Image (cartoon, rainbow, N blue to C red; front, side, top):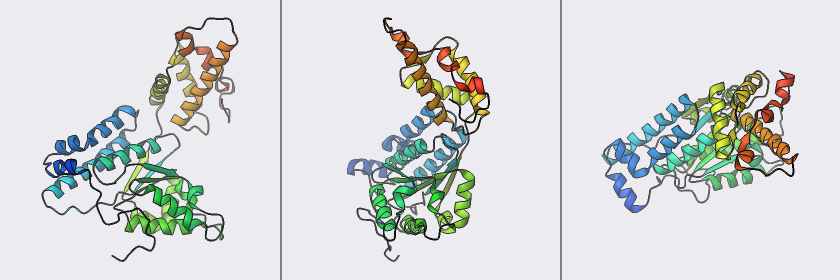
Amino acid sequence: MAAPSYSIPGSTAGVPPAPAADASAQLAAARTVNDVLLQTQAGAVIDELERDLVGLAPVKARIRDIAALLIVDRLRLNLGLEAQTPSLHMSFTGNPGTGKTTVAMRMAAILHRLGYVRKGHLVAVTRDDLVGQYIGHTAPKTKEVLKKAMGGVLFIDEAYYLYRPENERDYGQEAIEILLQVMENQRDDLVVILAGYKDRMEQFFQSNPGMRSRIAHHVDFPDYEQDALLAIAERMLDQANYRFGPGARDTFSEYLAHRLAQPQFANARSIRNALDRARLRQASRLFSDPDRVLTRDDLTTIEVADIRASRVFALGTATHPT
């Protein structure tokens, strides 16, 4: 293969990444799926994904399928069978707050544990990180981002904004061309995940068939159901050392029923925002009684009033609920 037009310094294109010597020898002796899972600890990451993420059953199943492919390829390689490095570039589609970035981080860890990327880090960027504002500015920006991402995963959120055909002076196409070359010629050292709304990503791929041809795995992230959102809320509170007081969980469930019927709902992201505002109301409530001796329960409990004060209950289908 001819040398790539854009070769990113620090990469090892064409050289499969390898674990440390002892671990590599043990992995080379693996003959079962469990051998690979135990020696690479990839199974632990997959289990964490299952345990830590609420819902997302189709997404978890697809990630397991990808992991299964990589593990079987590793076993084939150990027996001297042809095991060409698969294309691992991906597309994550779905509405905001559905866990795309979180899953991308876990995917990076799985790829690293199995030896498909050297470092396993995730570099998350948007159009502004890649595209310049004048001639000669885009290539250095894009190549600098790619240099940082080499050996790991590059996550490009709202990737469709790279392509703006209505603006003849836009430099997004230059970034796309560089990405295409690196995704093909240095795919042994970089995995690219493109993310965004499903319909806009489809339009992006239609306008850039070269990009579509380089994406091997398309993963769609569904919106969360109300029960899953309530479970996410409880988990977020627990992680922050808070809890729902008597009746507050039911009130928050009622809040969700109203909020889901309103526009601009962003799944887990909106849940986090709602809880942040409930904590703000709780703090204001406690602050209003400055002489009161506050207990641990006082400081960690979200009461019904802290949720009921939201304008969601008063405005019903308000455009900008709080």
